[in-house]
Image (cartoon, rainbow, N blue to C red):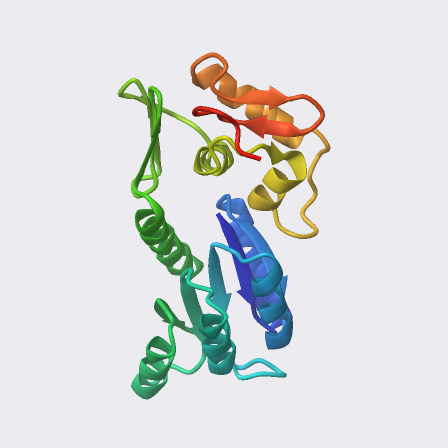
Length: 223
């Protein structure tokens, strides 16, 4: 799950990034509204955490602009503006949730998990390919009805491949879904996750396209 954090308080942003990455989220951080809108146009995240008191553009205008440019994924407002009219304005502008500062990191993580489940249920609660079923609401994977234990990043990688059935995913494409900017990633990290997944899934469920990447096939490959 890829998260874009828009927050100009650097110490707070660094703490949030550390906590989210430790919880298995892929996080990118920007400190300006115009930069955030550029990211939404080029590489839209699954969830955006948005501060309102930004130095260049008020966060509510960033939110309205994001919705106008058809960014439909969940937005969590994170701000010191904790009055009821502020919350109403944020929700009416298109926010999905509102968390006032100061806050407990555990509550932020819980709210993100709730938004993640909501996002999964909107896209497709169940993805089934052969004997493998991935439930985006409960975040569970089963093979022939038997629950499979996997790490969050293994789940994220499998979900990315199952959502893109018949479309080859390059290592760079998969890296971008698993890790944030500046996060140290070994050159063979995706290969390690693929290796671990293959031990838990049916033979040849994840196939290698030599020199390109990986794919889960369901009928002929798409271009």
